[in-house]
Image (tube, rainbow, N blue to C red; front, side, top):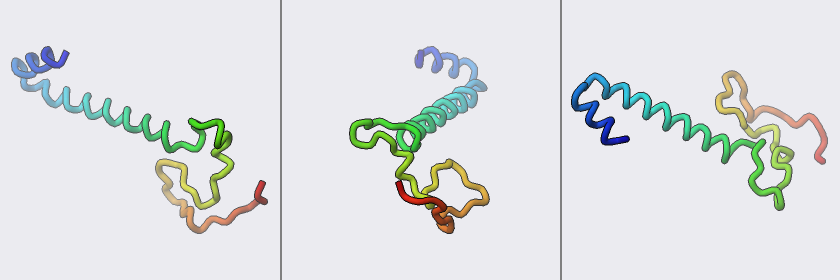
Length: 82
């Protein structure tokens, strides 16, 4: 597959940016999927020791990828500890 891409790129140099952008997009999608699988509080890999990891999130924890107008350091807890 890679050899075929290289032969096409040598014959048609205008295909090189296409291969680069498709490769960068696939790599970015794979890295984002890895980030969701590892750092998302909704995903539980160890159900024996920590069955509900989302309950341990404090009000100061940022779990969104991008927070536009939210400062999580100034938030206060509204409910009791369970």
